[in-house]
Image (cartoon, rainbow, N blue to C red; front, side, top):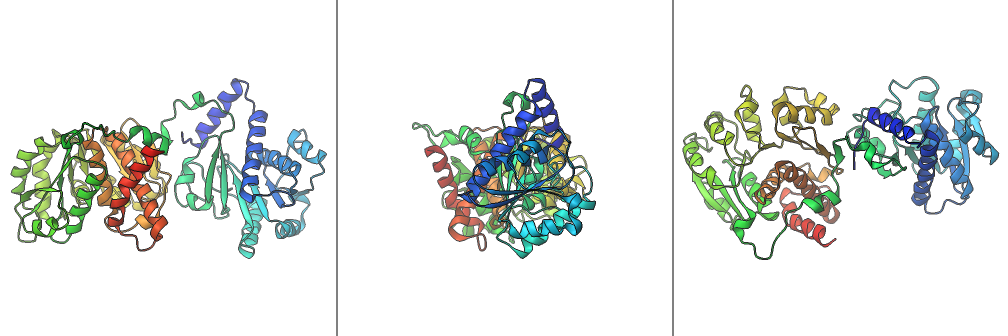
Length: 517
């Protein structure tokens, strides 16, 4: 499922018109489909009091078409015109032919009529602005939106359904106007927009449903940003032939752990095993091995010297250089720490890592390389970086708020500039490759906002790499499996108190479900 910006949507609309799919045809399709989704949302539309807020552009036209269908199906529809429309507006004429009550904001002193209409309504359809809004909302539009927000506050059961986007939400980056509506449900038209999967916009959109309004798929062939979908993951998840052995599913070398972060090593190794890696070897401190062995019974070990502070000593680089070529994937960073010893270790390892098998860098490895000038030139291109926003800030030298303001473009630029696969973690995780291909996770689970879940994700990605997936496919498939495992745990336990280790037994269940359905 392609994800399009406001500008790309306008280009697609123009191409559709050139093919004979005029604005009026697409508007008719959009309004009918919105009405159908509203009908499903309320179960029984007959007799329901619905208020349609109609804006000046195509979004308002979609609302007028929806009003007509809802009226024909038995709803008690009222239209509130937020501004004047063209005198030859056919959809307005068709609504008037049905005697649907219409109130114009220009005739509504102090908006008292709107206030009465919202009080009498069970459902409000927001058809004021779609992707076309590009400036701050003020004047009568601001007043109308604030009135509706107040009505929702006073009557929480009042449902708000937005067409395409909640009015006031930026389609491209999720920024919101102060008067932006908070929708319960958003029916987005043709293609999803990036702003629906970036906060604070994502929170304003409520549940999102994408409807196909009849645009030929070929018109979006050049779009390389997509939603991460179950259908795609089904096609990508590694196969398990009956005649396989452990060598068939790859060997993962994990360099992780320190005296203060023992659990990170456990979680990363088990993440790789739980998605099907054939063999996982943990490179860690000699003193930690007895502790970890009691839980990591399937893992093999490569024991490394430690310094006085309980971290891996730089001398371990010689041991790692000797063994790295024996493995299909290397994962470095989980729980390593960032003191001088680890920094020296990473500096010594960079030359061999640049020539090694696929590499996953997470956590402290990212924090260390962030301090190395032009670090991306010292690593090969077969590298996956898995930063959370704070680590991304350190890597890019961009303020954290700026990163969160435009997660999509920051991630795509970083992947292009560094020539690495970049996984920007968080709600609606973004995965981008150097050639610009990008997938956006559709999941936001607050239960995953706890220590250790990122270690599992890096292990999952490494485990998929070991089984032969490309770096981009392993990263995207890993993000999906990790998110779905989180959803399973959330379903069982709720989103408070979820532990990272709860995800581990859920991972094979997700894979099993994908294969069975």
